Amino acid sequence: MRPGWARRTTTVPFPAARHIPCARIVGRVVAGKRLFGRWGRIVVVAVTTDLDPAIAARLKRTPDGLVAAIVREHGTGDVLMLAWMDDEALHRTLTTGRATYWSRSRQEYWVKGATSGHHQFVKSVALDCDGDALLVTVEQTGAACHTGEHTCFFDELPVSSS
Image (cartoon, rainbow, N blue to C red; front, side):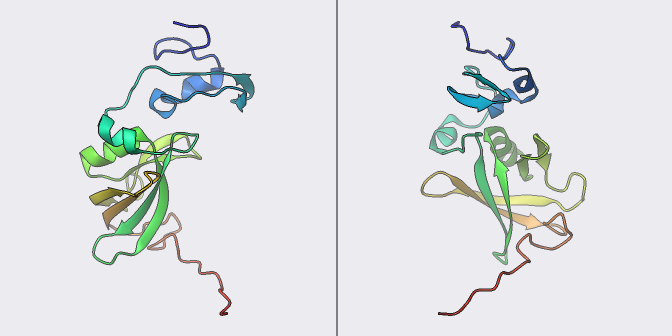
């Protein structure tokens, strides 16, 4: 193995990176960019997600390895929220039927409703034509928004008419 490369069983060159699940950084190459307070390069060669490789190959991820997930309600079509998924969150969602997301603020996976009781039961997942967004159709139990609102899009902005 070349110096500067990391395997799942070896120490990652930056201490903060050890706390991130390998699936979050698989295949990322960071060279000449500031990462976790240090300059460096990391390539993770071990794949730690069980997501179907055919699906994974179609995803266009952010530099953080995430894909936007637009969540809408089954039946009404109402847009409920925008969340983020990585390969592992998508795999969990597809295999369990429970909406699972990656929390960018907490840096951990969360299953919608696990603590609030406001569950999302997945009816379908569609990938957009560019591969950079998912449309997750769910049966929503209770509020979708952490504020208690049914949807996260309750704060309409004024639009001037032309």
